[in-house]
Amino acid sequence: MDDGIGTGRRARRGLPRRARLAITLGVAAALLLGGGIAAAAVWGGSGRDDGEARPAATPDPTESTGPAAASPDPSAEPAPETEDEAIRVIAMGDMLPHDSVNANALGADGGYDYGQFFAGLAPQLADADVTFCNQEVPSAGVDFGISGYPTFNAPAEFARDLHEVVGCDLVNTATNHTADQGVEGIAATRAVWDGLGPVAVAGANRSAEEQRTVPVFEQGGASFALVSFAEYSNAPIDGVSLNLMEDDALVSELMAQAREVADVVIVSAHWGTEDSHEVNDQQRAFAQRVADLGADVILGTGPHVLQPAAWLDRADGGRTLVWYSLGNMLNTQLGLDQLTGVIAGFDVVPDGAGDYAIERPTGILTYMHYDWSAEEEAAGDLLARRNLSLGPLAGAGERLASTRFGVTPEQQIEASAAILGPDVEILAE
Image (cartoon, rainbow, N blue to C red; front, top):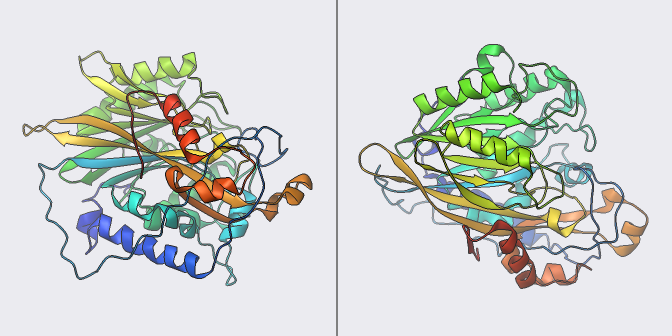
């Protein structure tokens, strides 16, 4: 089935994307607030890899769940769009359903609801025209068994909610966990996404033909190509099922095709040193290589913490925007830096002559919160983590105060902004 060559979300649905997401997430927020979620816990530490084990003693800072968005009037007429408008793209990092995430998503009816965790980000998600997400793990479904760290598999509802609630249009599936359920798990994950289009899914493949076909997503008069690569795989994998950065011929072929078929080329790179804010030499080398091959934007994932963003000069005289690591988004890791993420944004601006420029990199810092008492932490009761929520870091004062991280939102924002660097405009929300 087509991997996302389509007319874009607005053409497919009656309401424009921003209004639809505001309605969906506003309802979720109202349900959460109606349930009277308590925010009181003492927790912290730092994690290894993307697992949940070994709570450590070093605290970190981050938190936030912004105010619930009021549902807009569905009868209101959306503002008309023109192809001369800038297209707003946002990107989020690792969506990582640990066992405790899955447990909190499981409902009394046996179904899963991951969309509820994003209610605090309703306005920010609804403000995008195109959304990139990193699906860190397979969503092969219950037949493969639902599991967290170290060998992951999520239910099909995980992919469904990333698309229908979060609004993911460009989806990376090339990560070190892609092959956690083998090639059968890759095929099952791709089959789930087949029913969720239009969407561009890239990185994990069922065939050589699929691997060598660049998916394209259409929005606002522009075509977006997504090309995805991973640095390595935790499980044995063949040369077709997962796009690897070391496959020079594949990198060149896909980049050439993407540059030919799309207005905007976005490269997803799952790379880097885990839990490090420092960009390593391998990241820099690969970023420069795909920039010279025509990447407009590079979106890095994998380190589970934030890393800098920068502009790279490329061979054709243009510039490429690279976010070396977007950090985590949905997860229940232990360190504050692992719970601090960013909604990275940039504008795709038409020049009136058929070309597009990348402008105005912005970042909305986010905080992933859960309640976990000191006694539960001391006992290593990882499944006790509850009341999960995501929101802007700027509005996380009350939740951060309930933890032992010992920082204010302002302090964590300052530290995170310094990591991202001067090329990123930090937005409050």
